[in-house]
Image (cartoon, rainbow over all chains, first blue to last red; front, top):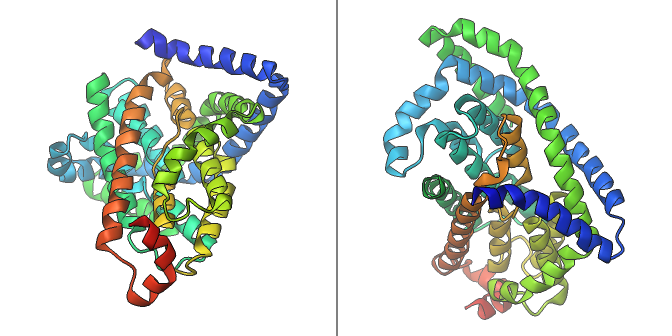
Length: 172
Length: 206
C-alpha cells in the first residue's frame, strides 16, 4: 500500500508525460509554464503567511492554543477529533492562508507522521475556505439571499473534519 | 481578516502575560515572520512541480475529457439547469478543474457558471446555485498538492501517503453537502414572491 502510494507520483509523472507526448503536446514547456504559475501562487500567499505565521507563532507561544484545546477537548474527543487541531477547525472556513499557517504549525509541532499531524493534513486536504468561496461566488452573481447555502456548506465542513479524524484512524 | 489578525495578536499577548509566557510570546513575535518565508520556500518546489504537471494535463485535453465524463452525474445534481447547455458547460468545466486542482482555471469558470445561473432568479440563490456553491466549498481535489508540499516542508518523505484518507474524508464531506442541499431545499423554500421567480427551476428540481 505504502509502496503503491509512493510510486503513484512517479507513475503519474511518467504516464501524463507519455500521454501528452502522444497528443503532441510540448510536455516540458507545459511543466515550465505551470511551474511559473505555481511560483505566482507562492508569491501571492507569501505576504499573508508572513503576517499570519507571526500571529500563529505568538498564539502557540502564549499557551492560548493549548487552553482552547483543553476547553474544547470533551466535545472534540466525543467526535473523535484530536483536540490539538482546534485552531485549524476555527480558522479553516474563514481564511485559506490562516488555515495553511495553522496547519503548517500543527504539522511542524507534532510531526508530519504523527496522528495529529496527519489529521491536520487530511482536514486541510478535504475541506475548503467556505466563507470566502460563498462570498466570491454569490458576490459575482449578485445574490443577496443566500438561503441555506452557508448552513449546508458548514454541514459538509463539519462532517469533513470528523471524517478526516476517522479516515486517519482507519488508514494509519 | 483584520479582525482575525488583531484578535490573534491581542489574545496571544494577553494570554501570554496571564500564563507567564510573556517572554516566549516576545520571541515568537520576532521569529514568526521568518517561519512564514521558510514555509513558502520549502513548499514551493513540490507545489510548482505539480502545477506544472496539472498544466500539462490541461493542455493535453484531460480536463475536457473529465468534464465530458462528469456530464451525466452533473445533470442529476443540477436538475434545474440541466437543459441549459451554456450553464452546464461552465459547471462541468469548473468541477473538472477543481478535481484536477487547477484552482486558477476553476474560479473564473465557477464565477461564470454562477452568473449564468443567477440570471434566472436575480438576487436570490436558486437551488441549483446553492448546490453549485456548496460543491465548490467542499474540496474535491484529487491530488492535494499544497498539503503534500506542507508535509514535505516538515521533512516528510512520503507526503502523499495521506491520499486515501483525504479521498475518504472529501467524499463523506461532499456527500453531506449534497444531502444537506437536497434536504434544506425542501425545508427552506423561497418566499412566495421569490417562488414565482424561481418557479421553472424549482418545478424541475422537485
